[in-house]
Image 1 (cartoon, one colour):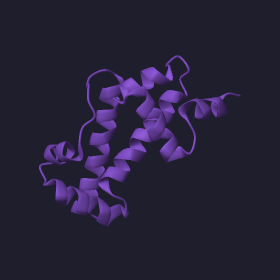
Image 2 (tube, rainbow, N blue to C red):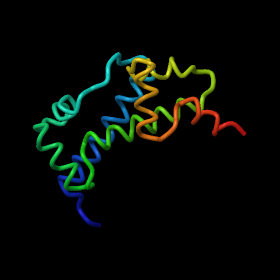
Image 3 (tube, rainbow, N blue to C red):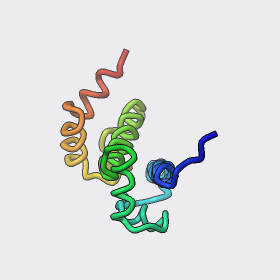
Image 4 (cartoon, rainbow, N blue to C red):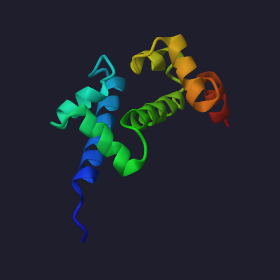
Length: 120
């Protein structure tokens, strides 16, 4: 069995930290979105090293991976119609109008339009 390289270990740990943080946000165990520098600190590495390593392993920036994971969480939350779009925005620490702009910028559609597509 092939030994996992240090860069892959950093990527795995970074992914896990993001997932745990997003879970903390939506379950009200955190009240603000962490910055890349804070994830690097949790990994005991320099933020530039984190960014360079993520780029080297994935071809994507550390910020880009974070954005995709936030977007995936937003989509997951939008599937739950018990939550308003405003509630979802606030859970993810966005001002509601900024959340709509951010979501549309990344997906080409508003959160409301995305939610409509999910309906049977």
